[in-house]
Image (tube, rainbow, N blue to C red):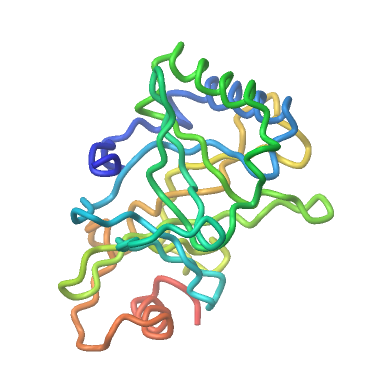
Length: 239
């Protein structure tokens, strides 16, 4: 219910145009608390509706740096092998709405309560609780090098429930990208005076026909290898 109640990505306000000041202010809070390696901010959105009893769970495709996030039944949550990736703030609570495989990149006990409180207070004060989420990820910089920017692509595999694939922008074919910024983290050089660069994007248009999704109507089962093969054959990513 939490995820399905979120605004769809197609109607969600574009933060880079309408809320750049708020983006900067939130990144500065993250920076001031030294939380930039594990926290960022993200445009709060949904894609397709999830079936009852499922959550969106991200896992590695283990090919070309891709990950995919699919509707998944979690019968028994395991904190050692699964963690929350997005947090939505309400006036009096914080809720999770997406998850990823693997342990969390941080120890919650070491996160200052004041940091979470200040993020929440800012979002409530500026009426952003339905627009911006707090994201958990590995945003650590190796030798000052930023994590590679990514693009999120929606995929419809036959009659299966649609899912999303996150692709490093370096493997996208030229001409198929129309990147809408959705996620920001603190740069290695600190929050800039100008517009902060986005690290994550939604790939709005990925074919000449504006369908918003990559469609596969063949008979092959959904596997990592078949997914990559399809994206290559449809000229979405490089071989």
